[in-house]
Length: 94
Image (cartoon, rainbow, N blue to C red):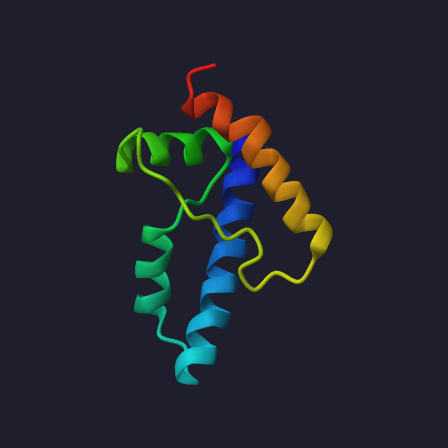
């Protein structure tokens, strides 16, 4: 479901961001993880498209990290494919 996709995306994002901050500082600061998660595009395709439309100008360019602390190549490929096939059409109004 969309809700399950959203929950899974949030869980994965927090796991990755936690690993990032832990590697940088050697300790986990939940506030930094939460703030970083607020700055990221996280959720199911409709939520991500909505965040892009709300937060960025149509002429902006986004740098997206699908492999951020993710060493599962197939998951990275699937995320990139889902973005192009499910998120981009919504953003472009298709």
